[in-house]
Image (cartoon, rainbow, N blue to C red; front, side, top):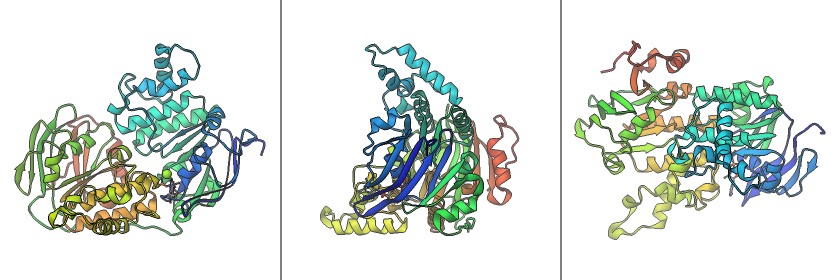
Length: 509
Ligand SMILES: Nc1ncnc2c1ncn2[C@@H]1O[C@H](COP(=O)(O)OP(=O)(O)OP(=O)(O)O)[C@@H](O)[C@H]1O
Ligand SMILES: [Mg+2]
């Protein structure tokens, strides 16, 4: 394979009883866009870590640029031009955007003086390539998750990569940002750079990939030209079954709204938001990045207290000043940036699940029975089909999609009455997505009121009985599920109508 940039043959890897990869071979040629597709826990991230030299395979050969690497070290991989963007982006939160993008590159020049002007110039050039504007001097911890992802991508571009590997790099990006990213990928492809891409968004895979490799339980099922695949085939190869999902069938349970929001405002974030949420409803909140959808959720959860307006729960006026008061009122929030906000990665799966409910599990005298704790955690591990060989292992040993289920389990275990889910199935494979949707629907069926923040159009249509559309901080429309379909919702979501324009708004009483 003289023309291959990267060639993996017969790679196997197991972790304490889990066969993460089983006899996997992969060839990536220069300028090829290759997608890696598979269910949560199928071994995608493990394969990527092996290519990056971070994890050593138990068996198999790695050849890069024609050179065999019996023991590939991370520095070898970088020297050969392999750049990886991981699910957690590996950014430095207290360095600026510019420093995160270009400081490493500047330091690698072995000069003793850091040319700060050069750092900024390189960073700006990389961002221009992606076609985004970010504040170069902002600390990375202060920017939204989607922007963090863009910083990670820009950083890889600065380092003269020959192969850029993106492990769910588009997970938190909106449609528009993904379009921009695909533009960039095609640009780097023209320069001969290959891209290996992991995504659970199958339409995306089919749009950008030249080749797609599908793995299931660590084994290659198919490695084919993307042109020979379609969405149904992908789903079938990934899961071994066909998946159909029914739309949520909302049955009104009470005339008394669970949550009433009136004229809620947080200047600079959102203005004059009014809506109600009834028991058993799943209400979608959608809008592009910057629409204020996440800020609204954060405000209801007490992270970003509103300046004006009213919130009522069961008809009673409440003040949500901070997270504690939100929790006291039975509000739960599953954040967008789960990997950094939602979990204690070094603590066990069990502990993460029960962490919010520990007090209610205490018996008389304040004693905490480990058996009780474990049984409680096990219930959620089963409910959410969390794939683990041992729930005492740290959460970081789980695959990304399974970590997400742990965050969800943690909140569900605390039995909230109002649950706000921000991107509940981002990074979750199609099969699991349907399972999570079923869980969310059955929670609503039990009388919980659920707000789902998402811009995944099929997800919104499957889950929600009503959808609120936000645009530049304002409510631009409120739609019954029945009046929407994919085309209509897509148009509404991407329309660049200005604030306060006459969007049809069938108000619901
Ligand atoms: N350090 C580790 N210790 C124990 N088990 C591990 C470790 N790393 C991965 N595994 C296991 O190996 C399997 C493959 O995990 P991997 O992270 O590669 O999956 P993935 O395909 O990336 O999934 P996702 O889509 O959820 O990110 C999983 O069963 C996972 O629990
Ligand atoms: Mg992964």
